[in-house]
Length: 154
Image (cartoon, rainbow, N blue to C red):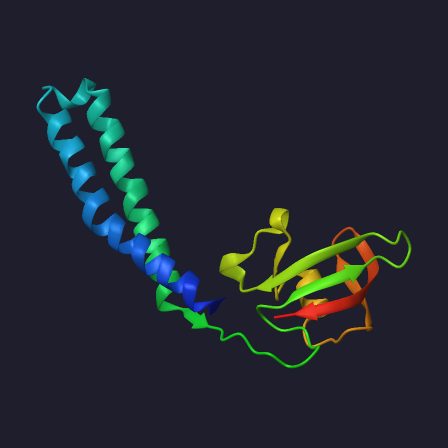
């Protein structure tokens, strides 16, 4: 499985991985060392918590490595008036007249609350490769609805 993302997001993940493998790993190792000094490990809640934190850290490191190893860097393409990754798309609901501005991003950058939608999401998939003036049908889990593309910027 490939994880589509911008070069910026890829660089953020590499930096986070570096931090976790250097600074954070040393901090957790120090917590374990300190907790061991408290004595009997069978009744040492500080030791148990430090070991749990170490497990969470190693899981996070493995998860980020997997994403980095399977990253597909998507270059922003600018085709006049066409929706692509990196586009900001102003859409209008033909029924209500409400307008929203969506940014089309890779799956690792999606944040629906901030209207950053993945090109794999129902809205993103419906908008990708369409142009200003097109009306698209979004097939969402809650049912289908239409959106008209008002403008596309890159």
